[in-house]
Image (cartoon, rainbow, N blue to C red; front, side, top):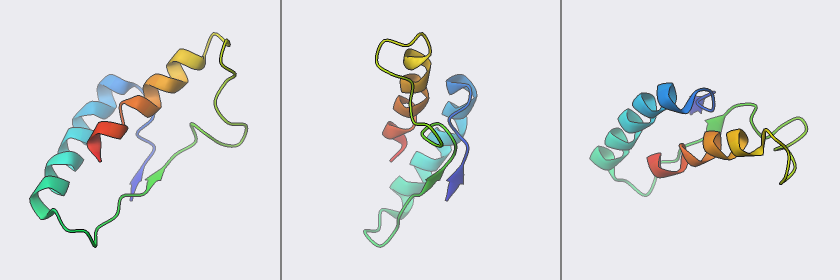
Length: 67
């Protein structure tokens, strides 16, 4: 489990790169990654045309390549 990496994408990238390296090293289908955080709940991402939507998407998008 990895928690709250949805903050500043620049800061999160270092941790996510380390996670990615670890996953490549073990490369086992029995492993799982669970992201804990509050970017999606309690009210979900901002609506498509909301000023904060791009920031929400960036926080999520930086996490996807790690897994």
